[in-house]
Image 1 (tube, chains in turn orange, yellow):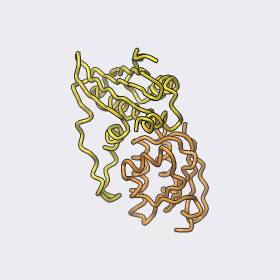
Image 2: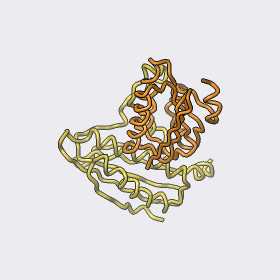
Image 3: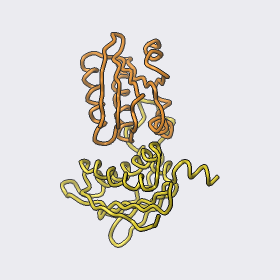
Amino acid sequence: MLEIQANDVGKAVVLHVAGRMDAETSVEFETTCEGWINRGAKHLVVDLADLQYVSSMGLSKFLSVAKALQPKSGSLSLCHLQAVPRQVFEMTRLIQLFPVFDNVEAALASL
Amino acid sequence: MDTDFRRINLPARLDQLGACFAFLHQGSQLAQFGVEDAARLDLLLEELFMNVARHAYPAGCEGSVELSWAVPKPGELLVQISDWGSPFNPLDSSPPDYSRSLADRPLGGMGIHLVKTLADSLEYEWKEGRNLLSFRYLAARAQDAAG
């Protein structure tokens, strides 16, 4: 199960993602992000404090969204990356490809 | 605890992923895994199951996958996953190129790398007309105790 709550704060859209991003649920994340990008959002800040699990399919969705934002000079920032999801990002070296922050406030301040 | 395997046979389809997890969680609980070890184990299974679901059988042909697990002792789980597709060793793939930038990084190729990193031992064989992949997962606490 994956739950996503989005909040447009002007300079960015903050997405709070909770639950598990696996091969079945991760499509919802991509679709949600694409919707915001199509409405003009350039910066997405993802709060992962309550993300319990991410598989390679989930990683591919993060990559896909970041690639979509890059030509627009946008960004996909990750916050509260912790526990097993953090290990997965580290094992695949994807953590080096994203702006990573301890919290949403720090991510927003960087924009 | 014993090494008798519990088995389940499922269609090799994305919508069976939840059933895979539910079956594996029985083993995680019996092996007394904590939350993080159980999550890492789920990850191992998902990557291998999805590899079968996506690649083992021709398009339009519904195949099956057999999952089995055994708990030799607390903190340890043995898992086997097999399919009846064409001979294919998923462990033969090359590791991802970590030097690539965001724009050049491919979307795929990370699953098997995660499997190789997370499993404590990993073995593939083509046996009696099926692909059989076996792995052993040792919980973090058990790894620390072993030194």
